[in-house]
Image 1 (cartoon, rainbow, N blue to C red):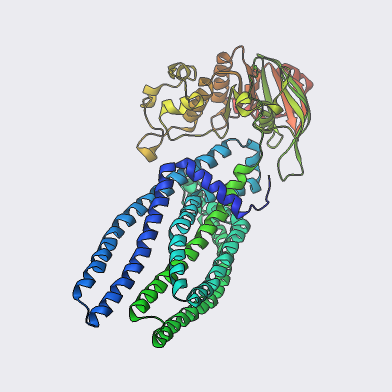
Image 2: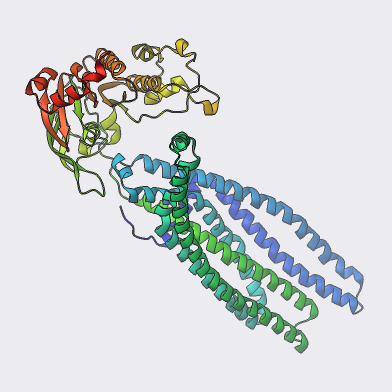
Length: 586
């Protein structure tokens, strides 16, 4: 990971590459439409000058016929404007849509390559949030850059050359007018980048507190606990801190803006007075005065728009630098090779510490899990049980030591290689707002096998639940919801549907009663004969089915053996089982 800022040139070049890949046709169409509008704008100025000269000549006694040609030519130019604006509008819209879609694809694709442990680091989460924000703003920023290059710059240069031929002083004054505007936008870009870099974490916290108040996910708990005021207070405090910094940032920009725009207005008045002087001195005619005034008025408006748009574009591009920086980071996907999952699993001197933590969650673990056997991991909350399963599966790499499947250390292999042949069901399993079938098939989405077998194995009867395989499991989308126990069976069915030689259950039955949990584990034992099984539970009544049990405390294995062996030890396992004995009494 790196926090080094990237140069604007590098970000811009990468952005051009991305948007070109998104849609070459749209890219070219935006360039052509911008050039077309630039040419129309210049021709309009030239024809206005010709028209005013003709009007003056007619007023001085020439034939009125001389006025018809410039009028007709100007009408043609004006009639082409709507066509050009329509093409430009369509090109801009498609450019943003295609570009934004492609940027999001790049962001999502890069995120999918990240390691699960990276999501345990708040700095990493902030980085992803900023990159997501950049993917939304990137196409708009580049669209402005393209229009500046192919609409504003050609138009302004052609008019400056036109004015240069009249009097070079006009060009110099116009350039001086817009130095303050340029400086203002440069300051605004820097302030915006620094603000987003500094307040990204605060923005994310504010959004989270708001989610605790209004989202469907949190609403019931928040209502039941009477904690609306608590979360509103947290939201208000966080939002106030964010707003305070935001207002301070905008106030600074506003002060600079007022001063710079005052200088800009003084410059424009100076140009106008200079033109009046030229007319009075006979340097230019009335017709040329009208054309120059119109062109200066238009060029000043366009330059102001160009600089302000450039400022907005640079803000977008500076935010895009977060995305480019993420995409530009070196990362190793690991070797993509088949790892047999029907061999012994060894943990050799494994220790693990979470990011930003000084306490090891696992300490010098040495463990061998024989292929085709079942292992139960027990212990009190915080003992390291769930972390152990993630290390065993390869979701997390050890901070120290290694996990070996057969003779292959997992550290150097890709995620696909690690997880192929492994199924897992976690305590906080996901309740997808999809159909029953899709909720199960999502673990092996390319399979054409039906779900009847796993539904039967997990004792899920759709007719008894009054649902079908196509029923959406969400009332939010017009479907039906399930009880906690039924959802857990769906999650287990999802794990069983995935081809596997290793199955991990990390307290997936925590929400059902101990008797029902024991029944689920008995069924699971029958289903998983011949496979390596690892399951975590804090209810020791279900551990009898395991071939082997380990007891964990403070990240260490303190006891190990079969159910009977651990009972005979009369150690920690025995104490835990005795304290839970009443759960299993009718």
